[in-house]
Amino acid sequence: MAGERKVTITAIAREAGVSVPTVSRVVNGRSDVAPETRAKVEELLRHHGYRRRVQPHGDRAALLDLVFNDLDSPWAVEIIRGVEEVAHAAGVGTVVSAIHDRAGAARQWMTNLRARASDGVIMVTSVLEPLLHKELTRLGVPIVVVDPAGGTAIAAPTVGATNWAGGMAATEHLLELGHRRIGFIAGPPRLLCSRARHDGYRAALEAAGVPVEEELTVPGDFYHESGFHGCRRLMDLADPPTAVFASSDQMAMGAIEALRQCGLRVPQDVSVVGFDDLPEMRWVAPPLTTVRQPLAEMGKVAARTVLRQARGEEIDSPRVELATELVVRASTARRP
Image (cartoon, rainbow, N blue to C red; front, side, top):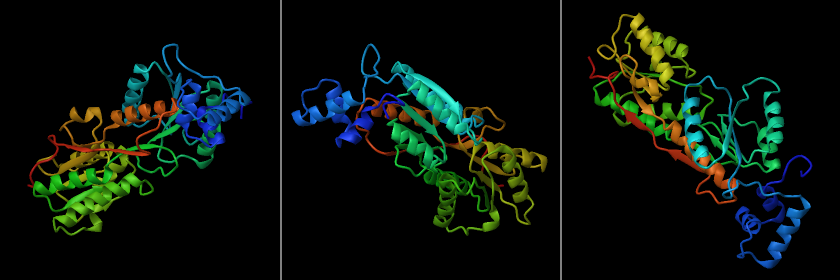
């Protein structure tokens, strides 16, 4: 291990059979460590040639890796903004990468990570490959997963949002406006967030005593085109919905264009709700009613968490879910 990379206190703690904060106290010269424990930890530190990587003005991580599956999603910018704000305040550099789905891209990124000797990794992904996770763990690199898609189930701290509650709030809003036939454009079924938003939609209908009609749910993939085609499919029904809940803002934009091409007005003829609250949604025509997913705050929480791990501090919780919030704008109105 020492031959590949400077060993971290996480790896030392694992080998010594003690907690990370205990190793941190030894590294920082604290006196509140049992003598035999201190001796064991110091021996391992010497054996692995551990060198404390700190900033001149405190015990801070020097570099973080922020890694996306890809950078073509508009919410990537919001997460970068949140991570960078916290990292900049801590005097920490940030390296942004995209590993895509191309063969070898993840391996190349891992090679670059070893060369940089990053102090922590923030993964923005719905799927963290087991081999990648295993290698990061072997290297002792702290990991936090920002999981806007809600699909990661690994032994690493994660930051997500309350997708079920958001789906329910969006549907309840339309029900309160008198809508009873509410179309739903789903996200990819493999993602937990897609299923959670769909479950929230169904729960709101059931709580209101409104039948859940399967023909009113159409598939999507979170991108504009699927929202367009999904909405066209809904409008082609013999009894089309008077409102559409798209489980992403991009699909909501596709749905609005489909309604325009059908000669229908939003919200006078059909109401539309999205999910994410991307910054531009307040400026589209009409401004979109949507469920705000706190993307920048998710980035901030992830950055704070990985920095605490890099310093050898305990974290508050392995799974953080930030609250979603319904933002009502001009794309929804009472049922015609």
